Amino acid sequence: MKHLHYILSERGFTQWLILIVLMLGIGVGVWVAQVRTNLVPQAAVETSVQTNAITLKLKEVVEINKPFNLEVTVRSDSDPVRLVTAHLKYDPNVIELIKVNIPRPATQSGVIYATASAQPIKEPVISQWLETLFDNKSGSAAITGLLDNGDLKTEQNKDPFSFITITFKAKKLTPTEISVESSSLLLRAADNANILTRTENIKIEPREATQSATN
Figure: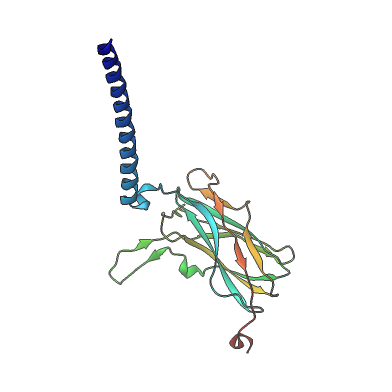
């Protein structure tokens, strides 16, 4: 009987020992995973996300009764694009659109030379401006540009493509916003499918003009 009790006790001890070893193994595994995550750069752990977007960028401080420029930028990380349409909305009681700045034909060659002996670098350019409309009564603008070769393609973590620059003027000291409407388009060169996945608006906060601006 004592021998049987000893066997059962030994088996119980063995089961507890196995359980303790398993718990220690799990704890060590978790610790190793945490150490590995901390040692590996964050950029290597995260998966890069491709973006196809139309966004807005202010090029200077906005002062009342003084023109300011807004840059419309495009990202097309996933596929080459052949047509871009930016539909903008703004409050015409606060700001007015003065001019859509179409690049001069001399800048539309798409070939840039870094030095006299350098090889030409092909960059995407808008070959035809199909639409450059705006209405200060409704506070809307529609700008469409075509790339004949469908060569507008951007890369992740690099600068977006500068699509167009628009000149506005603030009429009141009232915070407002210029938005990119969901009806905007990025048409893929391969099949004319709209691949626009993200738009980004911009806040406008006009302030009093400086002395130099009022003279």
